[in-house]
Length: 452
Image (cartoon, rainbow, N blue to C red; front, side, top):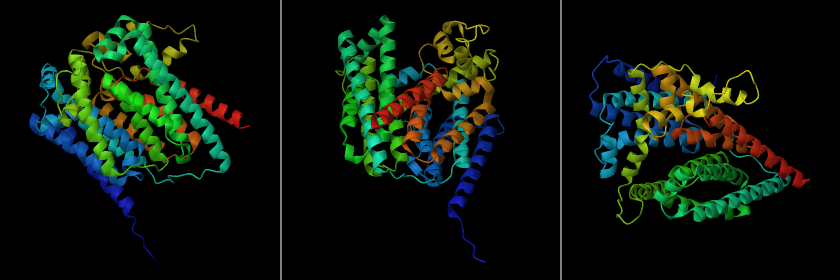
């Protein structure tokens, strides 16, 4: 009898066991079974983030190019970045230090850091439990190649149209000149703000079509268009609008096996972080005349301020707010049903506190939001672990699906709002997923009709 040792399964079991023990340790620290001083808590959270990253990179079948891993890293930057940089005392940007001084050293923030730890571990366990090896590349027949070519140019055409529309609106309104000008235009004219929002949505969806349908033989023209727009948008201060579609594109290319050299990727990340820090200073001052700060960790710290939203909802709970018990997840779905069912009351959005993007602006101002904060305000501490376990499982299930043009496009348009949710509430996710899938199905149908 021949016995074959499955090393991949052993690594997966060991990884799950390590993270499960970490979860017990984190919960024990949270309920004060043992004392966890603030400095040690920050260091431990940084260690947890790095540990989960390393385990996922070495146990997930697609490694660092899996949807699970890319999402976890982006989520980690926006929730653990500030903790990481502060733990090594490398925040050198005075404005960042000033901004976080109002909330970062509070007791609620200490509890928020515990919640981030729980989210990291829950996501990692869920991703590993549900992940499995699948075939990365799919064969493309000559007929499929022609269909992909048509779809690639349809997506590229939409991408170019909305990039041109962005520049037309930005120049016509004066928003192109600085981030301060952009904010003034959007604040003073809500219609322009809505136009920009839909422009970003269509750019993101079109980029998914381009990335999934792309073949080396098609060239890189539309990627070049996106890169030019991204440079202008990034310089203007629109980091999330550039970063999230780029992350989704990386997920799509990873599903097709189009991976990048690790050292080149690392160099690009460093350049991005340095540029993000410079852009951040311009967002504060309104211009690029104030000198550059080349510490890439300042950008990591500033983006990591999504922790603020978690701290805020913990404050709500301490002031007596009840758990929502899933109401914020159900509210956007119920509100859509209410459009067609007269018996359902549809409260005005600004009066519906189940929409947490609305409530947080009323209570704390435009600080963004967080899926950790949403899980906590609905189900408490245990809810953070359960929701992120399920979320890691969902990302693993998407990774497990066999790669094909149709499947990858539908996954891509569904991922776009989930990445955006890293800095926002769940409120817009259901509608954006439905809209994205309808958008994708229509243009896939159009590509088939043109082929016929």
